[in-house]
Image (cartoon, rainbow, N blue to C red; front, side, top):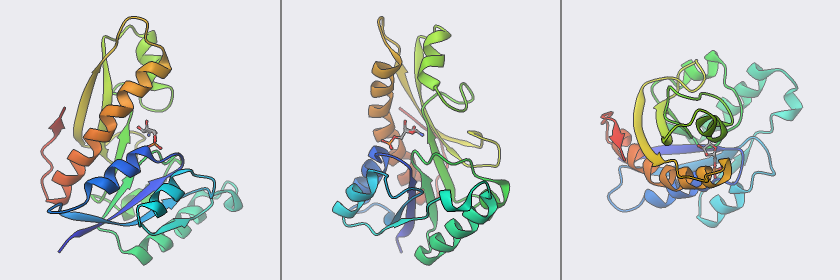
Length: 196
Ligand code: GRF
């Protein structure tokens, strides 16, 4: 039976689109829900166009109460009964309670070669460090931010004259290849890291 995949987004959802498009034919998984933490997330309309059920759990009414927001998130996710959760540009820090609940079932993509540059502004930081190679990483989510077992990496050259924007665009192209490749393997029960 196909694995059910829920994808969490906050923005345009280009990684979400590449994941959804990949789950066809003999792929061991199918998308069951795209969930955003804001009704303004551009990816919601793209998911609906692709025929995937969408939902919004807005974090703002919960104020600073992360645990209450995450309880609402878990309740909505459980309705969709996912086997796997893919964070794809989901811009909320998740607490240990939520992460433990989904332990071993939640993946994230991060736009750097982890363990380098956890957190934000990864492209500017790679440029400031003079790195000649940059890239992206898919990892299993653990309570530590941008940590957890690495399931795949894609390398991207830093070119003369790169700005954070040009570099981000080159990395994003690789993200769209890496995340589907890792998900396919992970959904088949294979955690061998993918290298692109
Ligand atoms: C990607 O760069 C991803 O690595 C980061 O947020 C961005 C999301 O882009 N976590 P999109 O919404 O998938 O287009």
